[in-house]
Length: 291
Length: 294
View 1 (cartoon, one colour):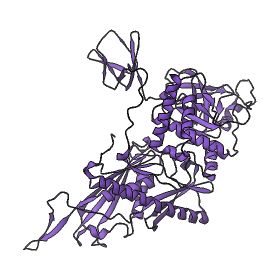
View 2 (view 1 turned 180 degrees about the horizontal axis):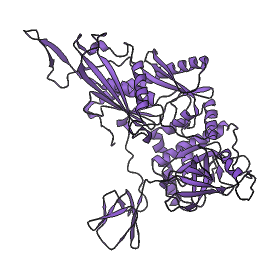
View 3 (view 1 turned 180 degrees about the vertical axis):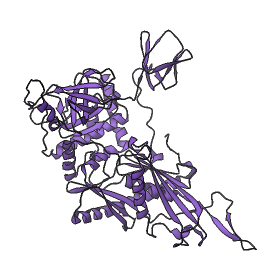
View 4 (view 1 turned 90 degrees about the horizontal axis):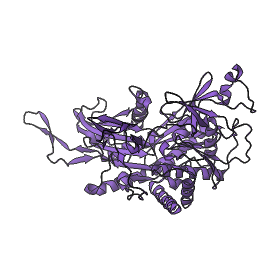
């Protein structure tokens, strides 16, 4: 992850600030930075979203493709994640430098979405054992300013909400050959129910307290962080510890409780924003990348 | 606990900003033709093509008699002798430190250009060389002055005055170097209760005003005492104000920062991170600055 160098005195200042619940930019320990969301930014995907959290910039595109379902789950579709750390974010990501971080994030996303309750995978099935929809979720890191996982999970939820999968039907011929018929209307599509898609909350341990949405400077002062993936109802789908330091069990418990509380509170404004954007319809002024 | 989310389309465009005094600035973009007159000498930021003088950077055209050059709006720090900079140590080498100052090359701080503890004046020995890391390590922040410029453009810094040296507890804000005006002094003790160093290289250091001005050590030791909450609030507010001013491309100097601070007192500190609040306080600041000049 792109890291900044911080001097010892700056670290002391940041840690004392966190203890007093007044971080360097005036936020409390549980406050997020200003977040900006836009969906449908990439026209040749089934769904896309762009999220800016502070200076962190994430672009997610979802493409739906037909494929054979997995053998052990013959009547379900699946989600495939790929994370690309572009050299735009920092020069360290040039060439294969960003691969490690990319695979780490992708593996975490697989674990977060591994249970069958987040997305109704059965609705992605076209014909059991033969055809199903696979959603390829591609994440592009444009700029790195700390707190990647949170921004990526919000962007994935927004992109899945925006995804439109064309409605297909299986037609059986007289000879018994099956054909797939696509409906004539290009706007006739199926939407996904993202009610149970989780959002990831990263909690960084600084001194004796933990903070949500750490900037790069705060990250440099923390030895260990905890990732908690929380759904709207408060169900935790994944807990993961990152970082080289150690966490003692009481603080892990406290951090999970905070993560649950903060995570639950993330979903409501996100849902409202997405509904509002949807309701703007054609009148919506697309900002995109040049706005 | 607050989460502030909004749509990108809700972002309002700033209504045409307050018009500045002179509108005769000749602004160019890369590839623009500056002039077709061949009688001029080419300066920095220009090139000739087919007998036309074209700009290679985006900026303002400057003409001095027969010399035409383009001064870019966004650029790395080009240091001159006498500039005050705030830099971060990146390497500790044999008789010098390499300092990162947002310029094209890392600047150099020679061992002979720093004050020894106790203020002795003597030749630096090998023990001094070995003790270099005890004074300045990788990651430390220093304030220094540019002593000279090497042939390749790298800056040579010195901290031979008691006001320069290692920086203690505080906050570093990075803005564009073109926003910091060259003035008589870059060290300010603001009335609101904090002190600020406006480095010419765009690095602004905000720190709590030291209680007593004891400087025989020249910033050798940094205190790890916790800074009181009231000072922290002032420093956080100042940091957000400077970020707001730099986002709206307002020149940074002690008066503009102070006016911005006063305008921001009407809002909570964490609200000053929101774009519309930033715009509001910068508009107020601009108005006050225009009134003050007029």
